[in-house]
Amino acid sequence: MNELALTFNGDSAHTPPSHILENLSEEMAHRRIAAAPHSIYAEVWHTAYWQQVMLDRVHGRETPSPEHNAMSFPDEAAVQAEGWADLCARFLRGAAEAAAIAGEDEEKLQKAVRCPAPWNPARSMTVREQLESFAAHNAYHLGRVVLLRQMMGSWPPPSGGLTW
Image (cartoon, rainbow, N blue to C red; front, side, top):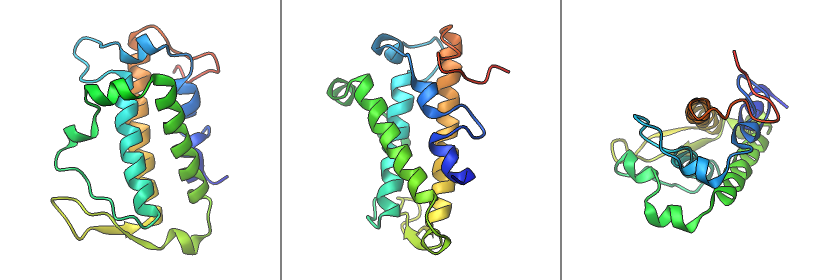
């Protein structure tokens, strides 16, 4: 597995996402920490949202970015519609799909995809660039999940995680 693929579901520059999300109860996932803008649930939901947008684009479905980033975080209806375990499973399925795409041949990774946004409707990038952006986005938000877990006294997880 190449390094780009490992960033999605392996042990690369950070603890594997499955370890980061393991052993968190529904209550812990929804717990709000003082001064933190989002719960763990909201961070993962947001990441799964953008992960799907990026996967859609990679598969040739021209999916636009929302008008405002707040629209990519869950509202109360979304929270009620999807439990924590289902959200984790959805996120990890998308990460596995991204890892598989990252392992494809170079010709497929150089294919251009459109990435429309309200501020730049004609934006495009290669599949590789979209995956690289996606990997960085996942790492950023998973790092926030780790920090929230640390603040709750719930780090490292049972399967281990970087503690230095």
